[in-house]
Length: 82
Image (cartoon, rainbow, N blue to C red; front, side, top):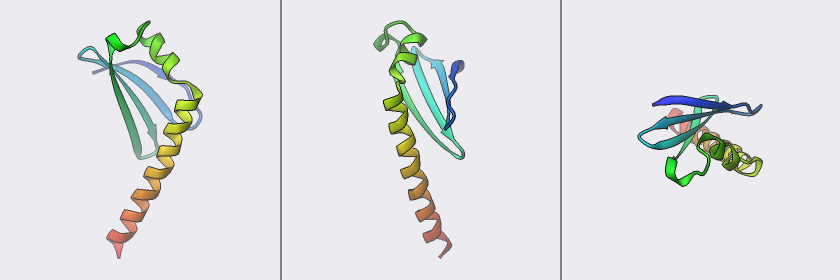
């Protein structure tokens, strides 16, 4: 797996990897991460097509998921501590 691009964003780190004819888009925020895989053949324009896919609406949905993930993890950890 090799990193082919990073997309700057103030609320999370966005990295794009290439591996086995797939693009892997990884979002990181603190200790949490989300990744999405798609075949290179499903994207027109290579990595530039991936940049087009990552519009602000999608990124906001990812950030909302991070909020939910963090809340779920905190709840689980509190149950664990009890």
